[in-house]
Amino acid sequence: MAQKKRLLIIDDEENMRHFLKTLLEKEGYSASVASDGLDGLDQIEQQDFDIILCDLRMPRMDGIGFLTEVAKRNITSTILTMSAYGTIDLALKTLQMGAYDYVSKPFKPTEIILALKKAEERERLKKENVLLRREVQTKYSFNNLIGKSPQFLTIIDLIKKVSTSKSAVLITGESGTGKEVVAHAIHYNSPRKNKTFLAINCGAIPDTLLESELFGHKKGSFTGATQDRKGFFEEADEGTLFLDEIGEIPTHLQVKLLRVLQEGETRRIGEERSTSVDVRIIAATSKNIPQEVTKGTFREDLYYRLNVLPVHIPPLRERREDITLLVDHFIQKQTEHHKIKVQGITPAARKILLTYNWPGNVRELENIIERCIVLADTEVIDVDVIPEDLKKSPEEDIGHIPDDIYSIKKFSRVMEEKLIRKALQKTHGNKSRAAKLLEISYPALLSKIAEYAIE
Image 1 (cartoon, rainbow, N blue to C red):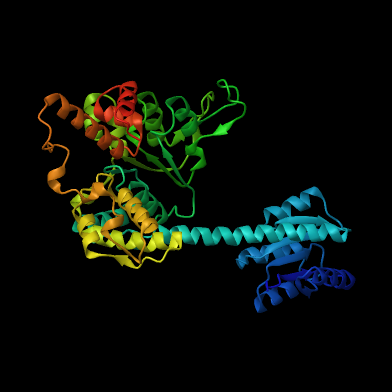
Image 2 (image 1 turned 90 degrees about the horizontal axis):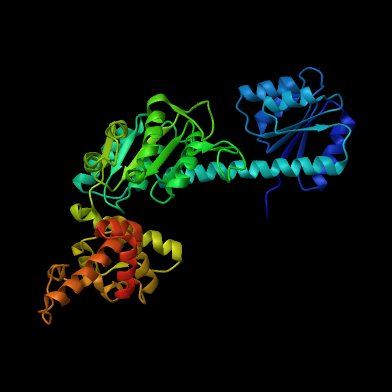
């Protein structure tokens, strides 16, 4: 049975106190009464109240005095004020002082009930938000970064130091190594943890839209701009903006990004004035940015601005000591998620996972564990549910020549198909990025995918 909401009615008129108490107890509230602000404060010291309904004109301590004391004592109850002598200015003043709503007397019973129901919903959302924030902060605490290898422990020490700063961070590493997880950990262990964290993948948004997404736009500045819109920099003000795949950002936008980093100001498309923002930038990339600087596709001055605090995450194959811990962690996580009883993994299956090269890194490992848990017929993951690709011996790598092939032409086709599959696996199916890795055109890649019947 749901616990009754505790309500405190503060009013100097005995008839009004009696009327409200009778009405609201019929509505399922547990109602207490107080004759003025001082009496109300005494009762708050005795017990907690979910909602407080407070009159404004009372002897000894009026509603304004009560709101002032509530603010000093950090009381978190949702407060509604009411008065028969109210004006718009008075109503606004109470809202500015922390009241949730204002009700004019005389009121109908349905009006006060509706106001309380709205306050109740607000209180529920507040509590839900607190719980979610706690959940997120627990999820991204340093304790949830899994690993024991010397390389990984060095990363943990580094991001603990980085978290306390407001300087830009550049996280590098292959796709799937956990760059976004590290970015979350930095934010949620920083002084900005109670502010906004926004993540944007610069490679997933078309160039034509990326400028508007980052910097916002003014109504009428281009076709389709039907209203003013804040960009991500304004949305993340006082918080953290995570720019994933920063290496994909076009050169003409790199200049605007550099200005934000240097000046702390952003300008919407079509606007003449700039807006000051206080945003902590965390960028990430799987590209070799110094190489991109040499090629002229990434500005050197922007690279130095972003690379104030560099964090490099090594690939999983270079820290194999972490695989066992990650396997156990993902088994527990996925069994809870899928409500499937899987207790562990056999030594033979674990050996396969320990010797595999993991081109997709931690993300690929988690996906494989999820697949194994769903397919497992017993309470342990065994070799039979592990994908065949993972069971190949090291000799069966991409350069291995099958025994039945002697034709250079045939072997070239085998190699071509394997390289395409490898590139698609590396980019998690992103054909545009795979074409760049393969150094062929996008239409050519689509043609070869169809030719080799690659799904």
